[in-house]
Image (cartoon, rainbow, N blue to C red):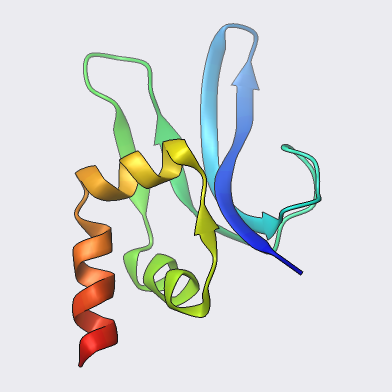
Length: 89
């Protein structure tokens, strides 16, 4: 079972709001998931990102692959740096 960290769309028409979830790579975008890691709200002056960093690092160290969008969010929040430091120690 390949595990992915990706965004699941929530919200109403033309007002997207996303949950960052860990799910099986074969499940649909808004379908079954394993765990919710945080939220991402792209609307507004600045995008609002809330991540449970300890759980995200846990899943990255277990081999979960982030989607392209989640990867860029993690880079902006320097989560990959924290994950590599934690893995090294």
